[in-house]
Image (cartoon, rainbow, N blue to C red):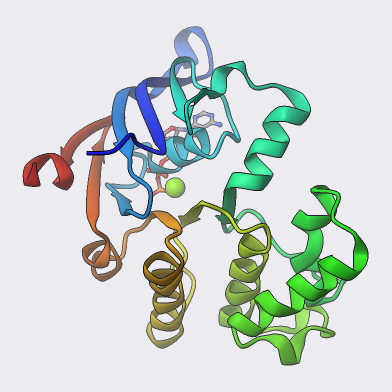
Length: 232
Ligand SMILES: Nc1ncnc2c1ncn2[C@@H]1O[C@H](COP(=O)(O)OP(=O)(O)OP(=O)(O)O)[C@@H](O)[C@H]1O
Ligand SMILES: [Mg+2]
């Protein structure tokens, strides 16, 4: 098989110190191939969000490393790290809320502002992303005034504006009713299949996990099953 876009190598992550130390990841390794859709599944507290935060370079491992497009990400600092994250990844995380008192469009263009893209281009790409999610009609609305499913679609639009190669989603359908969840799910898989965006999703939703090419099961900070390894 071709070289993975990302390799996760023997990741350990501990929180706290001394008696309060908790080993959330205890040696996790796998490769991610471009265009794959991967579900990270496991019980609450098994380390799913911790793993996703490390993969998204939002937090550093206690030991082990991540190679992204041939670059050892442990060597990235400051603006190079931010640029890599901002250019390569899109985030659909519940903790990355929209700013409620600004417009939908302002929220969506934020990653491009960070990337230093000019105002007209930001606006053009922001509106195009909203259109892709059928949310262009709400571009001028205050983000706070949207329904839950609409907010989630705006979060996805914002995740897309920098043309990410990898989209990370943590419980993308978790707070949505099943019908709206299905719409969001379809959007994610369309992006994966038609645009070749690698999709890495943490989910408790078995149907969503089943739709992914591959499922990685975590238990107590270890991979206990990887459906790609079974198939190989
Ligand atoms: N900042 C932190 N400080 C201390 N412990 C933490 C911290 N973040 C996570 N943990 C612990 O690490 C373990 C893994 O947490 P994580 O958030 O990765 O679980 P999860 O699999 O995403 O769970 P859930 O399905 O409930 O979201 C948990 O036992 C949690 O209490
Ligand atoms: Mg979690």
